[in-house]
Every structure is written in C-alpha cells, then in structure tokens.
Image 1 (cartoon, rainbow, N blue to C red):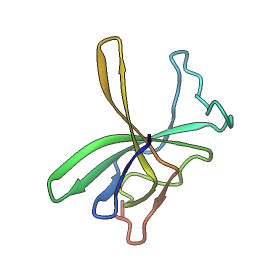
Image 2: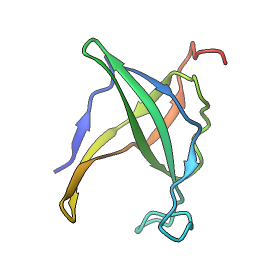
Image 3: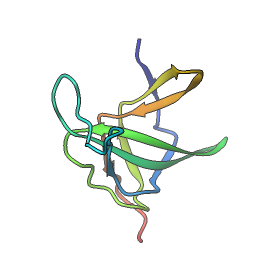
Image 4: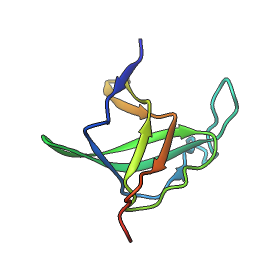
Length: 105
C-alpha cells in the first residue's frame, strides 16, 4: 500500500539545492527497475499546524529548483522504514518543480 501526502494546502519551499543521492561508497544511487539517477532535495513544509524540514527523493533528471523556490510536488509518498532498531519516514515524489510566484533569492 502506498501512502500519499496531500500537499495542496501546504507551502513547500526548497531549503537546500538538489544533490545526488549517494550510497555508502559515495556513488550516486539509481532506481532498481529503471536505472534513473536519484536526487535528494531538502524542503521546508509549512501549513496551519507549523513547519517541518524533510528530504524528498526524486528519480530521473535533476530537479530544476533552487533554495527559496516555492515548489509544486507531484505525488508525495511517505515511506515508513525500520532497520537495526531505528525507524523513520522517507519521502519520495515523482517530481519537484518551481511554482509561479517563487521567492526571490
């Protein structure tokens, strides 16, 4: 089962430029099925309850976003994980794109 997050009532802002998602050896990861390169983008998500910094993984071309851009997030998926007594939530999206009216740097 996939868990999608509705971002329509949230303001998502890039807080760090996209970076390659690397493995423990420093090599950029790629999707298992497609071979597309993976990217990590740190964002700040704000709604009426407050804000939170999360990292969103995308695959394919590097997202054309920069720090301060308001973002349109396509199909944000929350992926719970647990390993070696640790747990958390990873976030993955189909794409990240600048929204009209993006913040100026």
